[in-house]
Image (cartoon, rainbow, N blue to C red; front, side, top):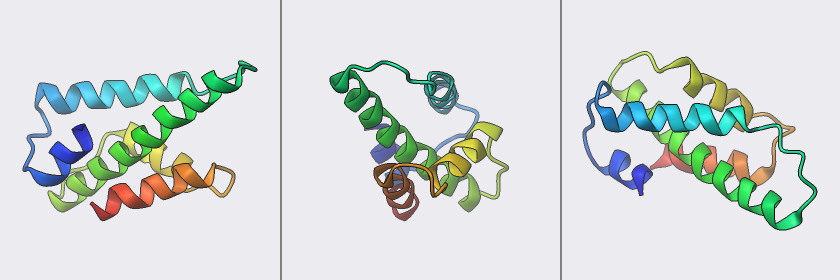
Length: 100
């Protein structure tokens, strides 16, 4: 839902909404060391990461359009999501967020 809001509206980069999203993206990356063997939990983690990748790329586009330097975490997401070692679903989510 946040990706749709950002994609279709002008946003204030210093708003509480954007700040909360950035914090959420940081938190998802901090839990990146997923070592649980439970298949369902791994799939849930992957689904969250796909959504987060799309959100991060959408934010990156908005920062770029506004000529505002994005927070470092957005660039970290870009590095991860465009890596050839990342799941294809994550790479595609990054590309889809940019296209929004």
